[in-house]
Length: 291
Image (tube, rainbow, N blue to C red; front, side, top):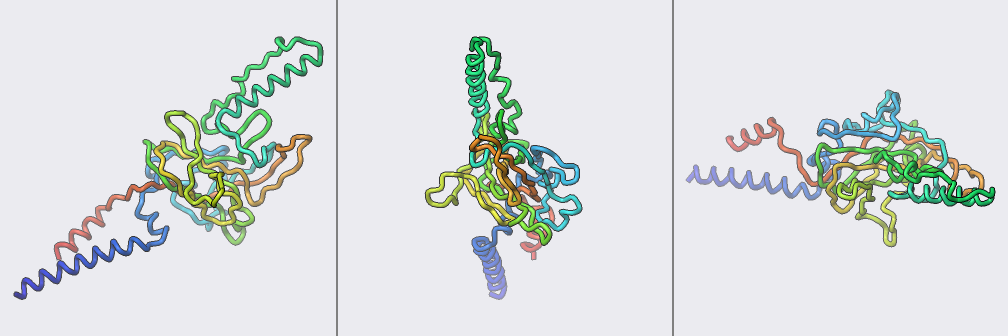
């Protein structure tokens, strides 16, 4: 009888522990959920990272090393890149924009030739010369202006199904996010079949909001939740920063001279894949069951 009660007591205890663990998972914070899932962006998980322009003092390699804080920013932690140039403000160029710009250049060249008394057929402009061959830059610059301050591309060893990307911008007493962090950001994934970039379809867009970018951010942590996609590449595009300034540039209505600095500390990418238990965790579980 005593043995039966002991076995029953242990069974109830184990069930209680398991039940509490499952129950507690419903109410854990987002940070705790992140600890249980695989971060595909980490270098230790085989991810490769590329940026629009690397900085030896704040290199891209710091964006997927697992450090999200800005405590060691002055020691070189985090990626920093300064933009100063012609910028298409308030407009985004998708894939194919380069070709459209090239055709526009041909039309203008032909009109100039007619005005000078020359034949339009004499105009020698090859539209393919302006097509963006570098897939990492595709859709983000044209003949006249840039459509982004910069970008980060993360490539996985093999395709993954993802539904969440977290971008961490600088945030410290010296460099608060509301003054020096990134402001407008869009996350894109590589369509493997179409070989082009596509914006993720965000879940938490406001009613009537069509844009999948996040605009006006003043926080350190920027979370994109979106419909699951399967891809082997993710691009984080930075279109404006909180320290950015714009200046009028000639007679172009949508093109300005812009200046601003990108400051990021980390990028995380998740799906639903959970981390496998470590040998130590497996040993502790085995010892618990044997007691």
